[in-house]
Image (cartoon, rainbow, N blue to C red):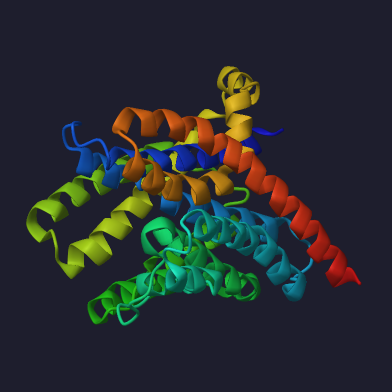
Length: 328
């Protein structure tokens, strides 16, 4: 395994743990500033988007041909993203005795993330599947990936800046495309930076700058469009981007690389990161509703890895059958 691959693996593990802790800490009201800590830990979501864009951008940079295999790409992403979400949604529907049928149907149609794109949509995944909005967003990003592959060579920096400004302005009319832009930018960055060194000092400076701007923005513009839809998303994206670059940089050191490479915990979380993401929020909602805090916490850390392994096992079986059907 190369340092570059290990860096991405650690970033994925970091993002997974951040998101889990983000939703757990909401239940820990005894922790000072628990709400602010939870907001910062939500950095895991843009990290996942950046990692996805980065990996496809780097893959495009390494390909000699511009052939995209669009149908194969779409089918593969559907199997990877939608099938686990469908299985988990049906499981939650069954164990809650059909408590949220409409929300479950919305998730099965992959529509639950539409309110994150436009304020005019009033649908979501309900109490147990609200976090699956990410599935809708990442599928939309994947929808445009073949297009990015065809135009990335012609895109200029000033065009990206214009696109960013347009996305920010659209927030004022209830259209939110900053996360989709983040994916496209990550794709572009990986494609263009394939042989260039990264200025670590600059990245660290951007990290500090984003944290400061976020704090100032919250103090002066909290509960406004400019903070909730622009400053919070942009600064969190910059923080996420900085963390990924810094982690990838640190894994270049031989000692750190050797230690991380032997970690079974990192290997497990990386292999089951998406399943853990799908499971954790629903499980938190279920456990903390029925049990006291400490029992719920204990049960959460025991049940989550078991369910993640089981979900991935079912996904492999179903995907293999779907692939066989497609080939037939």
